[in-house]
Length: 168
Image 1: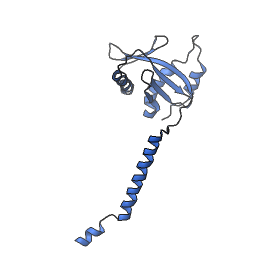
Image 2: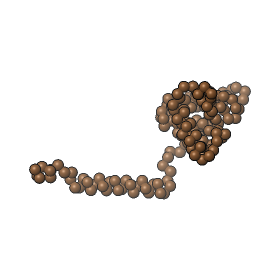
Image 3: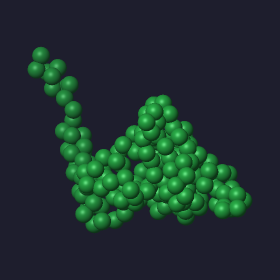
């Protein structure tokens, strides 16, 4: 019986190798964190930006309001899980800092088709494409509506954004 248990053990060299690999990985991650090196890919150029406010409606929906004009851009009814979840996360950060809902959010469409939602009050950001094209598309619709100038002529930025796919 003692002979069978000796053969079932993992070789000592393999355990030492795994331990060294874990130690080196931990040291490397710590070094990057402490050094302050930014490992994120830089954002592509902003093609279109829109400042929006979001308000709950008496019917239980969410009204999206263009901050510049005060015009209701879109009203969402029903569950709207991703939209509500994204806004809830941002609102929680504002509440924790004692900030109100006066300052708008920035919705940015980038030249590579990616979308970013930034809370101008806290600096928090959500890279919307990280949640898939269907979820990012909810916010993309809000940018495409902004693509008209004061005279109602489509702007070059909105045409460019409309041809760019929202990439995951």
